[in-house]
Length: 233
Ligand SMILES: [Mg+2]
Image (cartoon, rainbow, N blue to C red; front, side):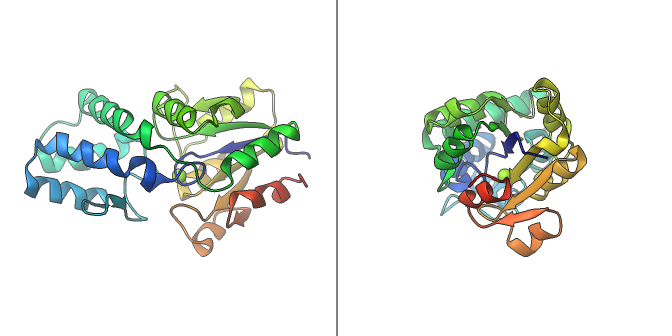
C-alpha cells in the first residue's frame, strides 16, 4: 500500500526543542516561583531543566508530554492546586516566550517540500497546544506545507493515545496503512502503533536508535531518510 500522508511530531522532530523552548522554560519557572531561587532550582530539577544552560535533559518530563501531564509535579512542589488556570498560565507563558525562538531541525523544510512534490499530505501531531504549535511553525515558515496541526487541546486527546492520528485519517479519508508517523519519543511510537500506522522513529530528539528500535517499524538518523522509508526517491 502506498503511503499518502506523513504525520510529524513537532518537538525534537521538526523543531529543535532546546532552541525553541529553552528560554521559555526559564520564563515559566521564574513566573511560577516569583523569583525565589531555591524553589526555582527545585522546579528545574523536577522538570529536567538546566537553569544555567537553559537546556533540557533527554528524559525531561516536559519533552514529550502535554502540560496537564507534568504540571501536577510542579504544582505539588509549589503547594498550589493543579487546576485549569495553572495549566493555561503555563501554556500562555510557553507560547509567549517560545514562538520567536522557534528553530527547525536540519532537513525539515526540504523533507516537507519533497513530500508535497510527491503529492503526499503532511501534518503536525503534537502534545503542545495547537495555537503555540501553529505560531512556532509559522515563525520558521513551514506552516504552509502542513495540511493540519493537531494539538493536545484540539479535541482528539493526546499522545500516546492515537486519537489525533485517527482524527487526521478520518478527516482525510485515509486508511491507517496509508499513513506514516515520524517522531522522536516513545509516546509517538506508541500512538502510531495504536493507530495502526507506520511508526518511524528519528534520533534527533529524546532517544537513541536502540531505544526507538524496540518500538518503531523504522528508525532514521535524519529527516531526509524518511523519503526512502515511505517510498519517495
Ligand atoms: Mg517530540
